[in-house]
Image 1 (cartoon, rainbow, N blue to C red):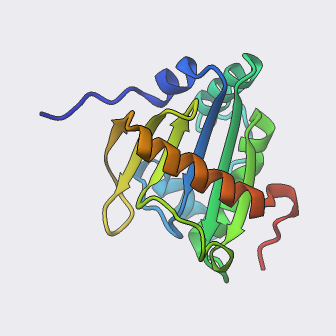
Image 2: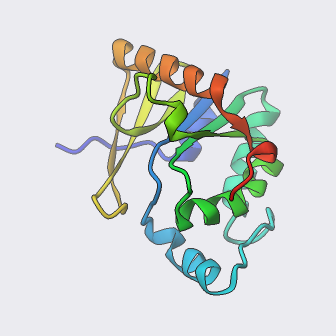
Image 3: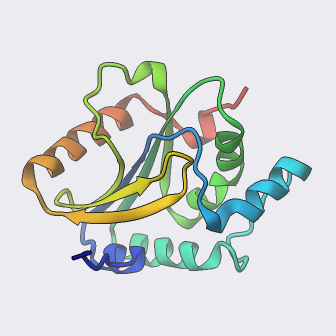
Length: 175
């Protein structure tokens, strides 16, 4: 039986202290981004308007989460030179930062000695994990929720190790 996953809004609305997100793929094939990514590849233009129809649901969620005193941090481990997808993602990250997320980037070669979980995740208040699963071509696959204490400790340790080494978004230059 498939477990019902809470939405990201439900997860973040329930957070009381922190919400951290670790991304470790160099490319995602998420259907909701396909059109915007294709447009960026063709024109070099990316939507950086936090009030646009594309971004507004996310920016409203982050703003209300941060307004309650919840720290929202996102770290991305990336191979260098970066993929086209990472270039696209980097170009749009200004929206995440404007909304209140703290975002850092870690070159993969600097993560070799960090014990990392096998999947991207959101970790809420250091205890609730939302595992993000993807297919081989990067499409979203069903995620899962876990409150396993050992897995949460791994996620906390991994995220904090990455965060300590990672470069703040405004300082990470794509070459």
